[in-house]
Length: 96
Image (tube, rainbow, N blue to C red):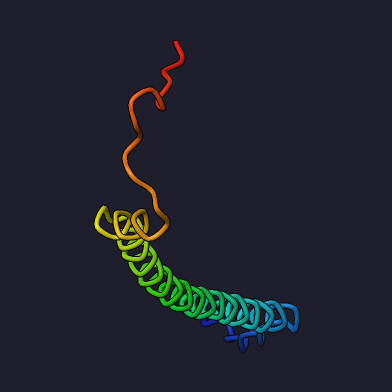
């Protein structure tokens, strides 16, 4: 039985190494960009949430002001202050 001489394995080619390193760098860069986009959107979402809360508070304050300014009691006081009263007979004209 004769044995064949064992040849040492050939080291990987430079192209394989270059391809692997380039792929690794590309995957790392892509992962970094995705994480950066997620963090940026998180900050944007946080800012929009704060703006939403501020606008809701402003909306509540404005609705309260509208309710106060259009209250019947306030309008009656203002009408009497300016000499206004209910219309006399014949002052109201209904247009068909």
